[in-house]
Image (cartoon, rainbow, N blue to C red):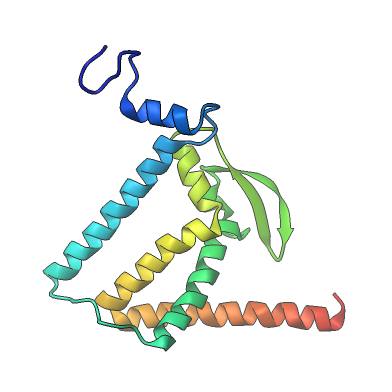
Length: 174
């Protein structure tokens, strides 16, 4: 069907863009666009919730909150995306490849396109997961600062403990 949303060859502008960007159809552009849309909708929802509650974002954040949140976000993102204990959460969207040491798994997203694949890509990427987790942290810092700081302290302490475990193991020659 050729119409305002389709070109003469029957493709939509989005399909034409995807073909021009990735002729081999390796990258799931529509899935990633959906992920970006979901993220934007989440941020918009958090903004509306904050406004409805009369919360304003601070003009600046303390260095302690940023560093604590950064360490905690790293740890939590790594747990979600790589830890063996969180593998049941990822299993519907990923396929196990191999153990990676330190109780971590290497996994790959299931399928080639679609929601399952996109969620699998997100769940196996600690860098991608970090954006979502840090957004939650900063939003919670504005809406419920004590809760955010308690969460950040918990995962920052865990990250420090993990680092010390690795140092200790190397010192022993493990």
